[in-house]
Amino acid sequence: MDQSILINVKPCKNNIGAFIDTNLKNADDVIINKIKVALDEFGVVFFRNQNLDSASYVKFAKKFGVCADYARLKGLDGYPEITVVEKKANEKMMFGEGWHTDSCYTQHPPKFTMLYSIKTPKKGKGNTLFASQYSSYECLPKKDQKEINKLNALFSADGPISNTLANRIADRGKDISNQTLSAIHPIVKINEKNKKKSIYLSPGHVIKIVDFEEKKSASLLKYLIEHQVKPDFIYSFEWEPNCLAIWSNYSVLHCPVNDFTGVDRIMHRITIE
Image (tube, rainbow, N blue to C red; front, side):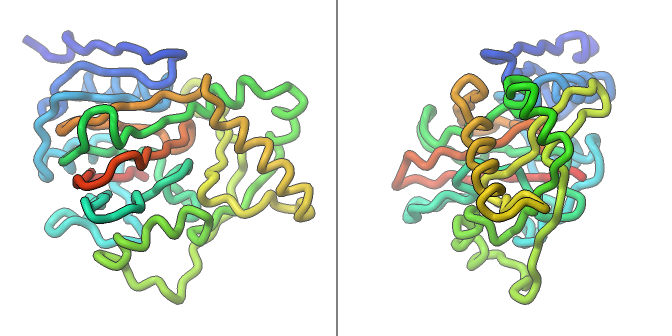
């Protein structure tokens, strides 16, 4: 039977993300297109009980576009497209701990991120939180929507989240010590497919609002960042081995929860241009 007939998309609470029940290893073009539609609609989609080795994972990822290079870390041996996102049993700090969107300090940030779970703490620990930026934009007062539609922000790899990469840079870091990674982007994104707007601000990377004096910039950023992560906009995904999450960096923020010790948490990440 054509497995594309069997695909089932189940929205999460408040339409923040959706679960999709399908076998990704054999995903045909029809299934890939349905996943893309769900991503446009919900911002993030989740799959359980997958069986992806590194080769099949990369093959699947390439159906969504060109795999992006990660400027800060070397990829997995033999599979440079895959970044190992890891917290070792003896470590206290979590890679990417804090609210953010990936690589927004580059001139062309990756559109999608994929995260595949290799080893996880017990279910309910080490969750990833996702905050819908469709919802955060829609729930802003109209006057605030109008104001931010015209604004740009400066994003930097040296933002507050940068210290969470220290352990992994020690393991697999690229030599970028003399290179500052920063970029300016509009703080509102428009999805070309469905015209939905989202707030594009990464609390872990944003430095300032462009052309605002320092105090005014800090005040607006504080207001927007607090608004972005209100509980009504958040879904908490519980990991177990062999799960995949795919999200749009343009329409959701994510934040791994560092609430476990003494066990490894190993994820394989691919970003898509």
